[in-house]
Image (tube, rainbow, N blue to C red):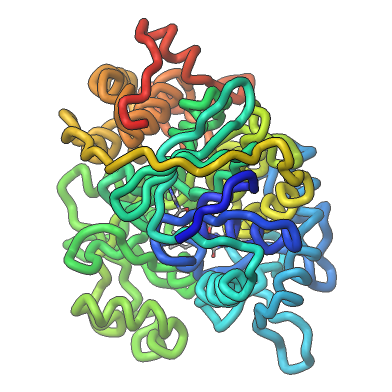
Length: 500
Ligand SMILES: Cc1cc2nc3c(=O)[nH]c(=O)nc-3n(C[C@H](O)[C@H](O)[C@H](O)COP(=O)(O)OP(=O)(O)OC[C@H]3O[C@@H](n4cnc5c(N)ncnc54)[C@H](O)[C@@H]3O)c2cc1C
């Protein structure tokens, strides 16, 4: 495979990466992705859809207000207005690219309603398969474009800078390559894979955040991780990733019960409130189930065919049996801090999708705003990526990949205990202490360390971040920003990158 140099390198083939590459056309780019195109992406697993103001009676102002209410005091109102305002155009763009959204009999878009949205505005495709449809359509288009060089089964290791981006360091088929470029776009998704229980693909470990941080970029809002309360407590092989049992099942009247059959929480409370109640009940030694027997019974399969299939594949008939559930890390509100065009603080380094921190979500994401953010961010980034006449140089091979030494600490266990649904000073301080030495050489330890440190520093409870020792919000809502240099100064170490 010939790897071109001197053209933008986009990392990730979820909605953000695919749409960014397509929006750049006819300008060429290299699209790097860890799996095959579109594989192992949260995008392909999105069930609900894209939030966009498309219906009568709805308004941009109403969507803005709902988003800001969910964000619990930390949204950037300019970003909210810009991204929410782009919603209708995002839907039209995807439609032009060939995504067939579901329509009502009169030909208008069929719009779903989700928790905390004041209007029906969730655009979806093939029912609960929206993400799969989008990724399939965009991936087909990308494959057909000679201007897009796809490097699949290829990992970004690090980004070389000298004040600005100079090259991307990649690993493919056990070989390492230095690819000269003046523009790297990180569309590497979320961080759920850092926790024992997650709904994300297990490769969602924040490796883009680690690369950006080592390149000197400012990261922000890292402590805000959204946990979904009802992931199926069994997955393929019984472990993560855990399939999602949509909120809509509770919306239809299903209840949360324990092994005695007793209810213990208000099922339709906000997502973070329900997650805490379930987490707490599990911690008390109970088993927790979602019980749809009374509310849906034999109607379950017709109303939720996808979820019915998932349950049955795990030996559960949801019409007759309570569904075992537990909370799982689902979405990361924080990421690489970017401006309206997706620029990070490092010239030539851009980000879009879940890896970016635009200010749209604040302390908590409003359901279905993330596909919207991924698409609008991808288009914005593509507008400013310039041709690279000066970045030309030859791709050089850096020799065989060297296997990293095993980590001395179990990052996922540490993150689950310390930075999960319920957090406190002692647990977070201990996590920071044990992750710090490993953070210098390992990406998962680095991102875990930065999340734990941010959570330790936020001595209040807000949005997706709950501190049992500081259960109330502080009077002032403040967003936290950090660079690796600040952090290392604080822990008294020198930056180094053993892996690159
Ligand atoms: C089960 C589930 C359901 C969801 N439902 C919805 C919904 O209905 N509506 C909504 O708005 N949001 C939903 N979300 C959230 C939404 O899907 C994601 O936020 C969004 O798809 C992120 O898109 P992305 O392109 O940024 O990242 P992803 O789609 O996760 O893609 C990341 C890409 O980066 C690649 N990658 C990562 N690291 C590297 C590396 N080092 N080198 C090379 N490649 C790398 C991965 O292989 C992948 O191709 C859901 C999420 C999940 C998990």
